Amino acid sequence: MQRSLLKSLRYSLLGVERTRRRLESLCDQGHLVGRDLEMAYSGLFIRSVTSFEAFLEDLFLAVLAGKTARSTYTAKTLFPELRSFSTPRIRLLLLGDRRFFDWLPYSYTETRANRYFAGKTPFAAIDSTDKKALDEILYIRNALAHASPHARDTFATKVIRDLPLPPRERTPVGYLRSSYRSVPSQTRFEHHSSELLRIAAILAC
Image (cartoon, rainbow, N blue to C red; front, side, top):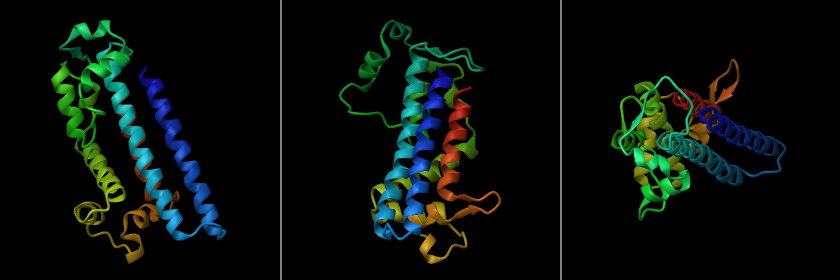
């Protein structure tokens, strides 16, 4: 099950990347104006983060329902009777009167795992560096989705910090389009997407 969930996330992120590259090509050819490209970038990055959150939810429910293969972690559910229900029913029971789960910031995932499991779980596998990477991704997502002064200020202080970037690359979209490294060539959008997949691979062990 873990491998299947990871494969689904990889497929989703690859689809986002293919679309991003097509948009950049259209912009280079003069077929797409800057404002349209910015809106598209916002949607694509938010889609990437949403796909990762869906992976977290599916993995959590799979562990709770006892549908994961053997792994290096021994998660013991504190509510074993849940395993007699289907995964969709378990989800409805956990949701209660809410419309959706919050999985990020990652502390939300950790709190939920501690509430329902005993022993080590896949959700305890990532370290402080991984959590910092997820925090940065969330700051970028929030700055794109909300565009509030608080979200923009948090992006500036937590993501941009003292990076030596020109003004056009100090906005959320400009930052994502900027170069993360030159050899091999990689944008910051690509870097953060690869971080999502890398962390998901750790959780799927």
